[in-house]
Structures are given as C-alpha cells and as structure tokens.
Length: 366
Image (cartoon, rainbow, N blue to C red; front, side, top):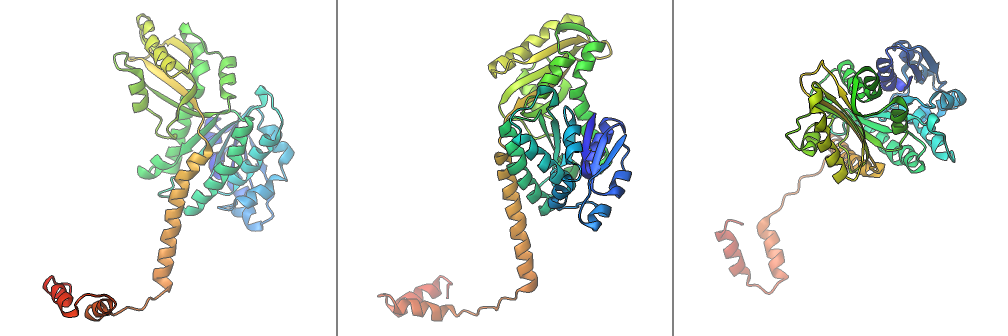
C-alpha cells in the first residue's frame, strides 16, 4: 500500500494503488478530489488552509502534523510515501515524518519506508517552490539519510513535464508507469520461466529498504553494444541522473532461451563498477527483443542538490529585485562632458594638456 501526502503526493499514490491508497491532506476539498480507500485530514490552524490547503507554506503542514502524529507514523511503516517538495502540505508533513525517523535509534527492516519525492523544475517553477525544496533537502532529507532509517529515496523531477508541456495527469501517469517497471520485478519472477539468477519478494523488499537514492530505467538490450553505453543513453528522464553506484539490481527478459549467456556482459559491467548486482534472467515469449530493467542505488548528499537549486534561487531573486527597481525606482540621468572630465584628469597628472586632448580628438574619444 502507498501513502500520498499533500495534493501532488495523493494523486500519485492513488494512481499507483488504483484508488486503494491512503491519502493525507489539510484540505477536505483536496481529499475529496482524489480516489482513495482511506482519507486522513490533518487539522490546520488556518481556516483558509482547511479549504484550500497549505499552498506554498510548509509551516501549515508542520503544525497540522501534530493532529495525526501517531496515526501517520504507524501508517507509513513498510510503505511507499509520495509527496511534492515544493508545496506546503507534502513538504511540511513529510519534513516532520523524516525528522522523527532520524531521531529513532534503530528501526527494523520491515518498518522502513520508501519515499518518492517530486521536485520542481527550478528554471520554470515558482521561486517559492525552489526555496521550499532547498529547505526540505538540506534539512529533513539530509538528516534522514545520515541516520539511515529510511528505505530507498526516489527523486522525480518536473523538468520533462515543463519542457514538453505535458498535462499534469499525463505526467503523473508517466511517473507511475516508470515506477511500476521497477516494482514489477519480483512479480515477473513468479510469472515467467527462470533461466538464471533469482530475485524473489524477500530479496526485493530487502533491496528497497536500503537508505540510498534509487535510479531505475528500462530499455531494449543489445548484447553487441557495451552495456554501460546503453545504460547511460537510457537513463530515466523522469529521475535525476545517478552518481557512482553502490548497489544494483537488474532483470533481463529474453524472447529466446538460447540468449541466456547475454547477461554475462551486464555482470562484467557491474563488476568493473565494483557493484555486484542481484539479478534475474527470465524467458518471456511475448517479447521480440531482450528487455532489461535496471536499478542503481547511489549516495548523493542532498547538499549537492541544494547547490544547484541555490544557483537558480539566486537568479530568481536577482530578477525580482531588478523588476522592483525598474518599477519603483527612478534614477536620475547623469550628463557627462567628456572634455571637462578629461581635463580634470590631466590637471592631476604631468601630461601636456593640449597634446593629450589633441590625441583624444583624433581617435574620436572627444
């Protein structure tokens, strides 16, 4: 079961679990708009927030968390939590959840939570969304990673959505379809004929509890082309690009059992990366070409991500200051007589006045 926090997170959770998710929000109106088996309303102090949500104010979400604290902390155990980092409710509620997890001395593997965050596209979205994301990454997320008390952290980006002008609903479907490629790995292992290796539900669940960023992708595999080259060319465009791989997992589906030895080149690649992967090779007669699903776990400090956002945030702020100056401040025009100014400089020097002025006139400076 998945848990959606805030407006954006609730929509994604509902899509993943086909209406069987649990969603949390401060706005009753927003809760009613999403199909879910369980709806939890966190009590906000602001009457406006109860109707319209936290909007861009994470503090409203933080304060509302106290009204659902025990229920929320029990609810997320062993689940996948979705939220947007730029808004108010998802950011605020998840910030407190992550801070709570960071403070726990130890947490059992079965209770670890996988988080899926949607970050704004800094160059196109509101500077408030960017600033909220900076605070979220360098605070709660950073602490949670250091504590090691979360499962995988998945960071989706709105970059493709804005660059291609994709409607929100269509983009949400793209996110969930991509995530399902990864989540379906153990199910395929049960449904299809095993040729080599094995990833069962227990192995897969253990993999999801690792406290690292997860980048997953799926593509047609050509054994005649170096795997590393294919992998880089097929990185998931909805996710941030991965850093150095710590652990990995792959599922190779083959249309012909005679191609089974093709997985060795994939193993060779990960061996060179010093990241021996879990893997499974299956026979899938419905395919025309080999299909590989890959997951890379990597560790990238949130502060490195924050540096990128800080640069964009600074640009936004400088732009706002310039607009304010252009709109409200009138600067007097300075009239400068270059000849007089040149003479003032010459009087303070040892140069011959007439000689220098003559040169300046010839070259068109006076």
